[in-house]
Length: 252
Image 1 (cartoon, rainbow, N blue to C red):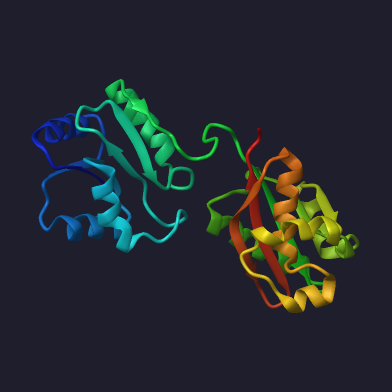
Image 2: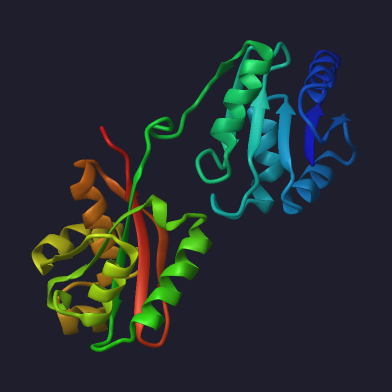
């Protein structure tokens, strides 16, 4: 269910017009209490279209925002229906694509502010593990990470680790089974990613020479694939014997 929320008479007319175009949608005109109503819909994961000022939306939703992987898509329109702004969950929640669709309905302009939204990102997986970690454990961890990130194997370009794992049988077998390249990187290369890590482990550094194998390898591989700045899509996840992270980068 989508909610189309309007606060003015002109906005209400636009909301009614949109509701005839958007399936499974409901118009809320001046809902009361406003903040509590929209927060409840947001928590329930309902997609929201606001026809009002962006400031009102941000102040109302700020207390219930979590992150781009969990928040539902939120669009903001001006009451004349000239501009459609994907305010939250542009990439992950599909707000960018939804904004383009709504803009087409209204012959409006979608105002996309997220980085390079119509370019396809390159995704890379980084993994670390104890010596002789079973391939089955590695595969289960990767499958869970892909699910958590809302991705499939088709999105992933490569599997990566640190160079001391170049002969790690489980990682080699996993890459072969998945039909993905297996790449390893040295500590000098991986250390260039230190500033982008979600956590820094002194234990890992003292053991292998970098502060995090999975995140560093994923980030460095994504950067090498595009030549552009990488970012983490999924922070390091771990089992008793293995770690996994996912990064991406957008082509220039």
